[in-house]
Image 1 (cartoon, rainbow, N blue to C red):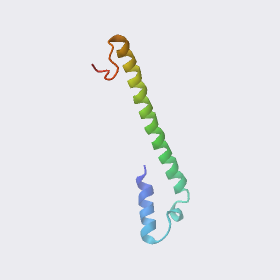
Image 2 (cartoon, helix red, strand yellow):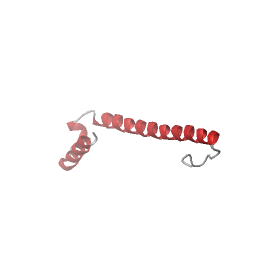
Image 3 (cartoon, rainbow, N blue to C red):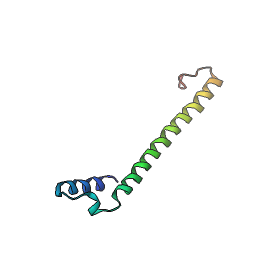
Image 4 (spheres, one colour):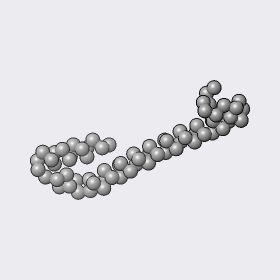
Length: 71
């Protein structure tokens, strides 16, 4: 998804023009892509933490272990 923006910026740098000459909304589009990437990373990390918390709580109740839910 980001590769076309990077290629356009490279062409702009080589030719001496800014990337905004080719694609006027490139900065805002690239910012939107980066914000979606950050949102996805936060959601994955939050899902991992919540899954670990729930499984650790279950194992603590069931067996008494808290550090490693796989034991």
